[in-house]
Image (cartoon, rainbow, N blue to C red):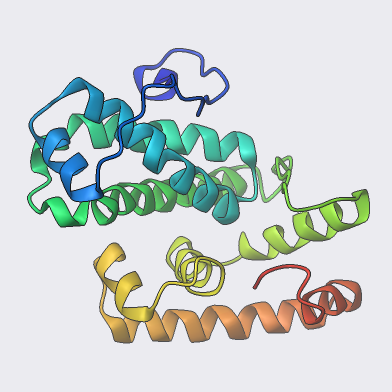
Length: 213
């Protein structure tokens, strides 16, 4: 595990390779060991939950490289704040809360960079679920549409339509009301529908459910 992003060092590629000494504990047992600072539990939390954060971050950001950076930053904070985990049954929610908070900050930074450069920010999108050049291009165009949403609206849309969370789960993770989630989801869906309608090929691809939205 590499914490280069959080510590200020040049980040290296993210590694999710296990050391072969994994332990067959439940999440609750793992959380209790993690709370008490047992070293094996720290390693197990990383190997068990980092893939979840990495996948969600990549689907949200559309970039593997940025998702790796976010994942490392998430677990830097998770490990620093291990003693604030109060309920052993909420380990995954505990990790999710850091992931969503950091993803929201990253999306805000993107919007600031785009504003400062008058919207001319080089694309770093490299979606993994794209077997050919055309589909990768279409996915990149879709993610650029997501870039036009606010960080909150984008997160709500991704968590609901791509991650499959309920409105109640999203509200809990993002510390907003269920009604706010529903309003944000409605607005994001309407805006994306309007923008996609202006791109005939992208609309065709979405209608065929090649892109999971």
